[in-house]
Image (cartoon, rainbow, N blue to C red; front, top):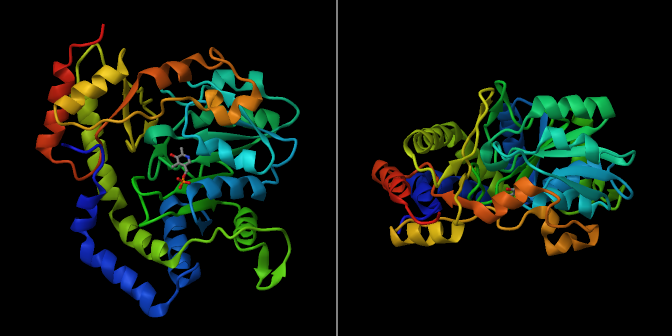
Amino acid sequence: MLKRIDLGRNYRNHREEYLQAIEKVCEETAFSGGKFADQFDKEFAAYIGVKAASGVDNGTSALQLAMLALGVGEGDEVIVPANTYIASAWGPTYTGATPVFVDCTGDTWEIDPDRIEERITERTKAIIGVHLYGQPFDFGRVKEIADRHGLYIVEDCAQSHGARYEGKMTGGLGDIGCFSFYPGKNLYAFGEAGSVVSNREDYIDAVNTWKNQGCKIRYYHDVVGYNMRMEGIQGAVLSVSLKYLDDWTKRRQEIGWRYIREIKNPLITMQAHPENTEPVFHLFVVTTPEAEKFLEYMAGKGIECHRHYPVPCHLQKAYAYLGYRKGDCPNAEYLAEHCVTLPMFPEMTEEEVKMVIAACNAYTFGK
Ligand SMILES: *Cc1c(COP(=O)(O)O)cnc(C)c1O
């Protein structure tokens, strides 16, 4: 069975280097925060092209800390796309703000700029834009709207490490960028980790305080903070992986563009990739009239697929209290019902890529 993603292959390719990096952390017992986490912050900020980065315990915390750094909380509203992983909305929710869900477009499946303004009120403080599946959202149009209404833009880059919009790396486009290094993301830790990046050093200073029990000076607590520091082992592993990220991205892009060119089946619809963007193909999501049938068919061909994501945020039970209904975000709802994720990871062999393409082209069920 070809797995949708096979992290074991990556580990075995770089095993010695990873183990040496971990060994060093153990030798120096720099386990929580500390020199290896700090070193990765510097490298990651340089990679994204921002002034500063703050390593944290996961991507969900990164989004929460971004809200705290911007002072978004009780009584505020934050625009979030309906088609995303639920954690995009947790950040504002945790700080007491209300996520306001906006539909995606019918072709890029990213937040629809035409649907944002109708949801802005005097309480709106920020827009969380998600570069979903590694495809940058329409930052230019979102920025225009944000500027007109005096709103912050937080980029959820959990799926877009290295993706570019008009030549610029995602993460440094808005006020704050939030990354996840969850295993399986394009750049990932050996456990949980994330990062908050910004060109505003005061935001990163604030994140550093919030994530570190609310103190700048040890044992002097300025705010009721959190323990959301990055672990040293994760920093050391990430420093190893960051050196290879561009190679991995290149391979993902090779596979992604081949899928796009060579899968020709009217039953399979691809995401649109506008010319001013460079996607990094974190997930290769397509839609098909009968997603479950397609999933079974692919499994029968020895290919594991998946569904990202079967329920849009606005219809999740957790957000029932917000009172959304079916029909509120039709494009996101269509996607949830019809999406299928094809295998996509840098270590896929040529034979495996060909096998996926051939299976997709031979698919004839459904309508
Ligand atoms: C993975 C992910 C997150 C959350 O990151 P964790 O590290 O798992 O907490 C947030 N947003 C999106 C879009 C994600 O894919």
